[in-house]
Image (tube, rainbow, N blue to C red; front, side, top):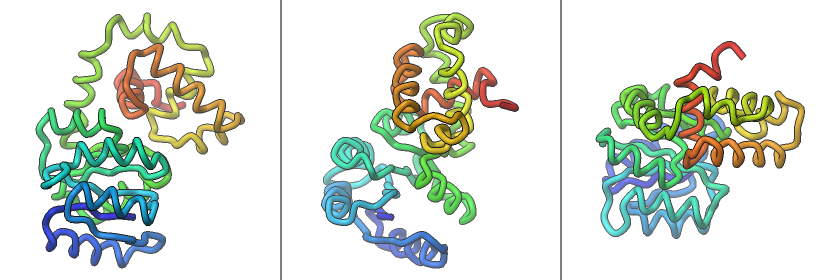
Length: 212
C-alpha cells in the first residue's frame, strides 16, 4: 500500500504501525497528491492511504486522478477533516472509505484490509451525515425506487449494504463477477446514485442488508 500525507512524522508513524501488520506492505510514501500519482504509477498498490489537505494536489484531486488512471488501486481517506463537504467530495471523487486520524490502530488496520478486499469503510463519526445526504438526494419515495429493481438487483444491493466486494457477491449469489458489475451499474442508474458507496448507504438506511 501507499501512504500519502504532507507531514513526515505522520508518514513515518503510519509506516511503523503498518510494518507490524502481516500481509500489509508499504511500497511508498508521498508528501502530496502529485507525488502519490507518480508512486502509484510505479508501484500499483492495492490501496492508497490519502490525506485530504496537501499542497500541489490535494487529497480529493489525487483520489479522482488515481481512480481514473489506476482503477486497480482503491483509495482510503485518512484525515482529520470531518466537515460534510470534505467527506462528500472525497466519496464523489471515488474514495472507497473515509477514516479519521484519531481512529485506533485496530480500526485503521481493519479499514485497510477491508478496502483491499473491496469493502467500504466509513468512520462512524461521519456515517450518519452520509446517510442523511444520500436520503436527501433521493428523487422519489424509497418504495418506488426499490420497486424498480429486479429481485437479483435487490440481492446484490443487500450485499453492497454489508460492504461485500464483487467477488464475494459473485460467490454468494453464484454468478460471474462480470454479471455482478452489470447489476451494480443498473442499480446505480435506477437509484440515481453516484457510486457503490452511496448505494451501500442507501441500502443500509432502508434495511436491505439486515439479516439477509
